[in-house]
Image 1 (cartoon, rainbow, N blue to C red):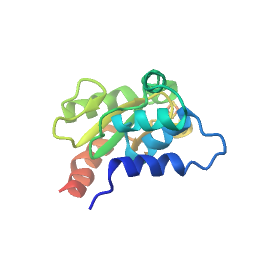
Image 2 (tube, rainbow, N blue to C red):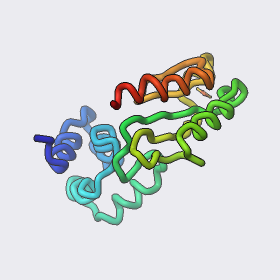
Image 3 (cartoon, protein in one colour):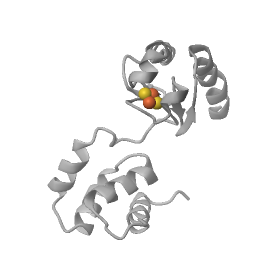
Length: 158
Ligand code: FES
């Protein structure tokens, strides 16, 4: 049986290694654990930090990297920072969006991919860079990314 979401949230909050637990550290821990911030987490984090639900929402909604709905089966992040931009990120982004029928960041309707932009993955010397399910792929080309989406990811998800 799948773990209850409240237990998952509690485990994420209680297993933070740092001594100073803050509202933001709780949000990050829950996001890492669940892949998003479930509504239930807001109340639990407010209680843990002795603050209001509104304060937790204010912090959570400030950071655009937090999502509040479950992600798709696969998460692809495309870096469009300066170096990757110079090395062809725009062509890669356009090819991926066309392939997934997306106009921007977001989730495909079938829940297959969540596409995100990233301003620097921290591997500029190997640009253009993307991540697939948090694993970096360096020196990516449009052919390579489309092959990964259409063959590797689809095969894994069948
Ligand atoms: S700009 Fe793309 S990895 Fe730094």
